[in-house]
Length: 610
Image 1 (cartoon, one colour):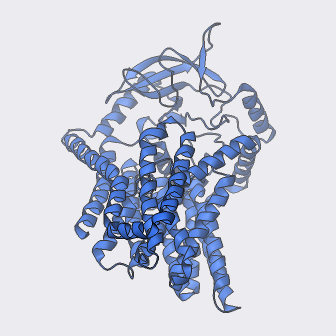
Image 2 (image 1 turned 90 degrees about the horizontal axis):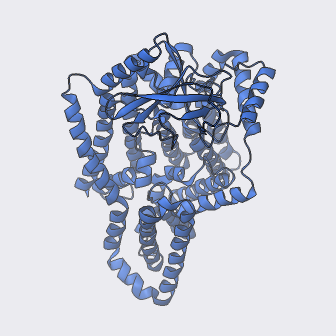
Image 3 (image 1 turned 90 degrees about the vertical axis):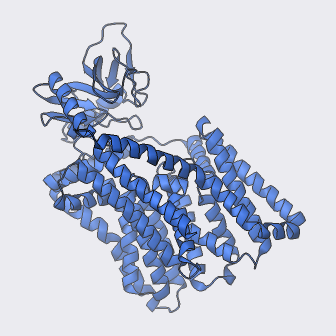
């Protein structure tokens, strides 16, 4: 087990490090990550984290980048010691990811050191958490916006365990500190996590012995929860001043007013989809339903658990139920995949059930077969049903529950014989389930690692770094088009690719609202597209020669300028289309009447309309 653990963890670390080297050589244009660098640069220059490439953002991100403060301040820390360029950004992503992997191991050691007989077994469990398909792609990949929220939640769990053992003010404060940090990492993860910690901490405080002393730790917990949000948001709000803060609050309120409710029928469908994705996670296969089932079974047998394990089992169920309650109200952001932050705790629940297999052999046999069935259904769903649409998640969830009912019936009829057979073959069944869950991802990422290494090795020998060459060629093409500079809208809002004379605006669409709407047209549209098809991911069916409407203005996409590496730059100018000319638009582009109301609203409130 030790060798396998070292191999899997070494592969995970190798993927992280090689990904950073690949980004250094070729660049990374994923805006979800790159926006952290833009906000960190603004924080360095003005003391306010903001996204200047998203003017008049629907949630005020151009004024205050409030939804990912922790990763922004982390990158700003590295800018003190390193050059504040894009290379520092790639380096910080690598360090953040390695920190998340390391703290995950620390948490498992803290929770399971007394349960595991060998370091190899503990290391293998560590590798199983890191390589779990859903967790790997959501929390252990290069998606920097969730790294610090996940890291904070892990540290809060470690502090919570210590508090359950010692009931001290320091551990209570540390628990609140980590819980508050999750909100500053990403609110859509932080809000349900913080809610869960408040409920768990309050419940455990109420159940603790002593009538007066037990509540003394609640104050340090609540104070700790507000420290990180106050330390990060306070200076930014101060630098914004009263006027900037008023504009930010007014903009966010307007967004809340115009955002339409989904309606009862659509809301019920979302609730059904969320509940289905608990059984069959919609992004990747996962141990999430397997671990939650273990927690329920452990709670049914809680009297046999030691006090600490009983409290941790209770905490898992409170965390899960509070998340479900919030998600049924706002499932758009609190979707089930992000519940996988509980994975280390859920693995602890699986270990607890495994250790008590002799006490309840029938329950353990049923659980083991049910876990295998859940993994089979998930693999089947993601192989054949997932591409067909979200409603098929309900079919797969129903299949999971139906199969579970059949297993219960079989156990009720032939329980003794089946339990004995399952106990004898428990390792074979466990390895089969683990192989089905893990091997596809490990194989895919291992072969990808080899291909990436070859790509990096070839690029390393080149005289000029590919990303440097991309910057040079793109800037030359843009300077030929706009030698005097101007305002450019683009799908790749990376200022490094453009000269300082260019003011950038990201072209994006979000729920048919008004993000980036301007009263005057942009000087140019410049879309990065794949050659020679010149296709755009965000604008299907739009290509060179078309007329495109964006936020009330029409542009003619007149030509494509070849770049390199199979890329081209589609250039569009403002235009007045002739009668009969078809003008294309994104399905979520803003209607004319909404834009008119929006600009009138901004003028009434004394806000700029650009």
